[in-house]
Amino acid sequence: MKMDIYQEVFINERKDDFNKIDYASWFQGRYFMEAVNSCFNKKAKYPTQPYSYKNLEQDGNVSNELRAEIAAKKFEAFAEVFNKKFENKNK
Image 1 (spheres, one colour):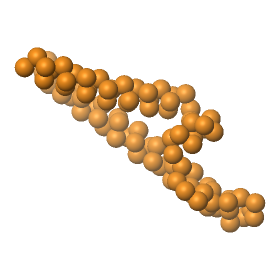
Image 2 (image 1 turned 90 degrees about the vertical axis):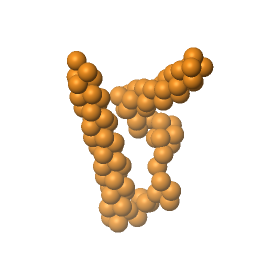
Image 3 (image 1 turned 135 degrees about the horizontal axis):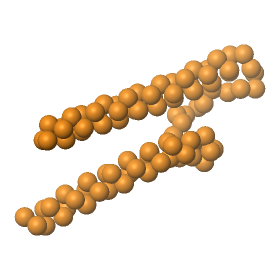
């Protein structure tokens, strides 16, 4: 039983790692596309600063799945901090 929990945590961590690599690769492809586009099209400009989550959300280029994942990660971080504070109060 105990090992199942560790295995599940390990698998979830690997999935998170894969999602991070996948997202980073997507960003790299976006930068590459902008670079190639700016070489062949005089009107296209390569970005002068890095893209950010906020800029993408404002442009509407972030999928609903990614928005949900970001919200879930934020909530997970909040819950961890809250639980640690709660545990420290009860000690």
